[in-house]
Length: 361
Length: 236
Image (cartoon, rainbow over all chains, first blue to last red; front, side):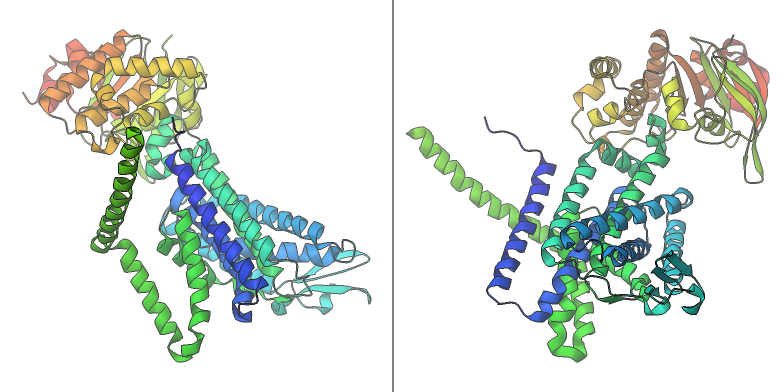
C-alpha cells in the first residue's frame, strides 16, 4: 500500500521544491554569467520581501488580524543587528560566525518588541489594530531617525539630540548618525544565506500552521467565542503568533541591513508595510506559497520594466489589477480550475490504462 | 453547600448596567433555567460565569472557590463548559474535529476517544455526519454539535445559551430531550431560554430575570402556574 501523504504536507513540499528549483536555476545563471547585474542586486531583496510576506501572512491569514507595522519590526531587526555587527566587526572577523549571531540578535529584539507591543495591541481588533500597528511602525522609524549612537572604549553612547551630545572619545566611532542612518555595516548577507533563511522561514511557517498551536490560532480566527469556551488561552496564542511574525520580520530586516553599506530609517516607512500587504493579498491570504510568488514577481517587476521607464508605474498598476482579477474573479478562477481538472483527468486516464495493462500481465 | 453560587453580581457595559446585583445558586445534579425577555441579562450572566465578561462587583463561587476573576480558559478546566448562543461552531472543520476540539484542555487520549463515542451515542446524527464539514449541517445539527463539543471537556456544569433558538418545534423537543439525558448522566445544567414553557417543563428550579434583576424564583413546576409568569412569558 502506498503511504498516504497528508495534503498539507504535500503542499509544503511542493513549495520547498519550487524554492529549491528557483535557487538552483539562479545559481546556474550566476555561474554561467547569464544574469544582469541589476537582477543580481535584486536577489537578496527578493528573499527579504518573501520572508516579510510569509511573516505578514501568518498575522493576516492565520491570526486573522490586519497588522501594518511589519516595517517597524523589520526596522528594529535591521538596526539592532547593524549595531551589533558594527560593534563586533573587529573582534569577530569571520562573517560565518558574525552573521548568524547578528540574525539572532535582530530576530530576538524584534520578537521582544512584538511581545511588548502585542500585549496592549492584541486587545484591539480589526481597524483599530491596523491603525495602532501603523502608528507603531511610524514611531519606530522616527525614533531611529532621531537616534545617535556611538561607541568608544567607555562603551555605548546614546543620544537623541545631536552627534556632539554623545561626548565620544576621539577614538570613538559613530554607529547611527541620526537621519543619515547606519553606515559601515559589513556586507554579510549574500544570496545563498538569504535563500537558506527563506527556506528555514518556510519550514517554520508550514510547521507552525500544521502544529497544535497553529490550529489553536486558526480556531481563534474563525470563532473567538467558541475557541474561548472550549478552553483556549486566547491571549497566549495571539501573542505567540505576533512574536513569531515579529521575529521573522526582524530577520528579514537583518538580511536587508547587511546587504547595504549604509541604511536610513526612512526606508522603513508605511509604504513598505503596505507593499508587503500587497504581496500577501495578491498571493492569497493564508496562502504561504502565493505570498512568496507574489513577492518575487512584484519585486522584480519595476526593475524589469525599466526599459519603458516613463510607463513603468503604469504597467506595475496594470499588472497588479490583472493579477487581482485573475486570482479573485470567480469566472476566471473556475476557468482555470476546469482546465486543470481536464488536464488531471487526462493524466489519470492514461495512468488507469497503464494500470489495466499491468494487471493484465 | 451549593455547587455554584452567584452573589450580588453586577456587570456593566460602559455606563449601561446590564446586571444590577443578582444572586442565585445551582446545586449538583439540578437543571436550572434562567428565563426572561430580550435584554434582561441572561446571556450576560452566563458570559460572566464562564469568564468571557468581567464582573464589576459581586462574586461567583464554584465549589467554595472564588472564580470571579479566573480567565475563561481556566474555568473550562475547572469544570464549566459553555454552549454559546447561536451555536458558534467552527464552520470549516469537520464534525469530528469540532468534537475533538472540545477536548482541547484534556491530555488523556483514551478517555477522549471514549467520550467521542459517548457524544455519538447521545447524538447519533453527529456520528452519521462525522466527516462532513460542520458549516453544512442544519441548524439543529449545529446546535447538537455545539452541545457535544461542550461535553467533551468533561464538565460538571454545562451552561447553555438559548439552545432552542431558530429551531423547528420538533427539533426543539429533541434538544430538550437531550438536555434531560445529559442531566441523567450526572451533569448539572444551567439553561438560558426564551422558550419559557419548554424550559420550565424540564427544569427543577428557575429564576426570572427582568432588566438586570431577579424578580421571581422558585420551583419550575410552581412558576409554570404563576399568573404573572403566564402573562409575561407564556403568552396565556
